[in-house]
Image 1 (cartoon, rainbow, N blue to C red):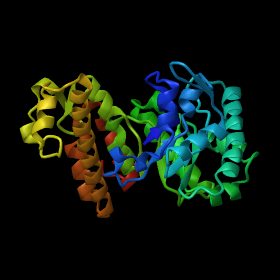
Image 2: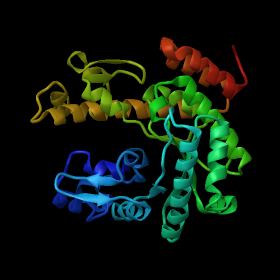
Image 3: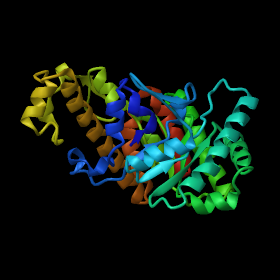
Image 4: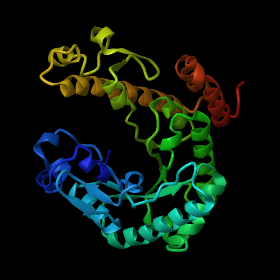
Length: 329
């Protein structure tokens, strides 16, 4: 997953920007081994403060048409409309205005992407049932609920970045989102949660979230953290890659990079970040496998042995299991 807004994160030149959008990502030699789906977010969260892509020597005005153009040029398989995320301190009036701006973008998005061959996700914002219900009410002033149900292939729940470390808020939002989607006839659509903390991932999986994006694996690496599990990290200088069988730790030259013997700092941190991502993905596969078994004991055992061992997360883990399984405490 990437975002339109990330194109100028490093203050690139116009020439570099033009190169980035000159060819679909998966058609580039560098990405030839990659066969997965490319999800390109609209960058709405970043564009709240600026409606422009700002490079070192250029600016590009951003609107729904430009965002879709960039998503296409980069070869996206999954796209979302340009949205206007809410903030915890927004007034009711501000939330309504943002919902209306998003609604206008959704109408334009559906018009522009009518022949798009990938999947289109509808952005949804709110921290509880009432806010999400009101958001959907506002956007249906621009596009009918029937059209939304037939045109979109998934739902992307946003505005949770400011609350990504608040487990109760995340759990409330996901539980209420599922209820809203059921009442509005979107129950069968997959649910993606935008921008959350990796420690919340097992909780969200257990609540039925299908996909999510998180940069925790990268931020942990930048701060010198090497993941030994989803919940535990050690300083990379104290890490023992010999105890891990992931592809990164199984490579002699990548192990040397993680030990600091790398051409650049980014090479060292890149290897650590990839290791962290693999640890995170393995944890996701494990909990999903246990959920698929359809039995309560495997999921309880996993949560008790991992997430619930983290004291700040334990009560939230019990709440999630009680909600998902009907209670065992």
